[in-house]
Image (cartoon, rainbow, N blue to C red):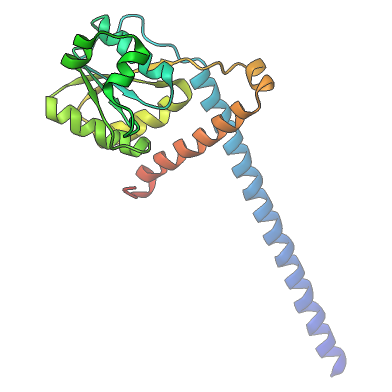
Length: 214
């Protein structure tokens, strides 16, 4: 009787061990597959943003600049001055920064800013930029917009803004950041910035997959 009990225990223990090994192998396979998918997706993301170029002669009803760097604002103001559009929104400006401060920094004319530049102070992130931009577009009844932001920030910005406004046409105008392999090797922080932006982009895209609104 004791031998039968011991045999049953050994059998149960053997089954449990096999199940544990199967579970661990399955989890390991899922983790390796997920990691490979993440790395592969990141490489495609990097290749896409690193190869982005601004259009040669863009034309639209309006221009929107998402703040986050002086080059973005300067490029947006230059496009406006060249006649690429009739009005410019600079979204997400620090409340302490006035339109006159920006005018002085960009060395623009007072007339240009008084007639054609709007300063948005409400947005504090890219989702806020999208909301602020959408309200401005609707208020002016614009149909086409040149979107100015850094190349690595462009995919997420477009995803957020197109999600908020699926009626307007958005023309990406990426401000080129140096993203070559040699630049990343010289400044490893670039890799962290790219990885962070890729994760945020995936989170934005996942809202549509899962139906989560925010």
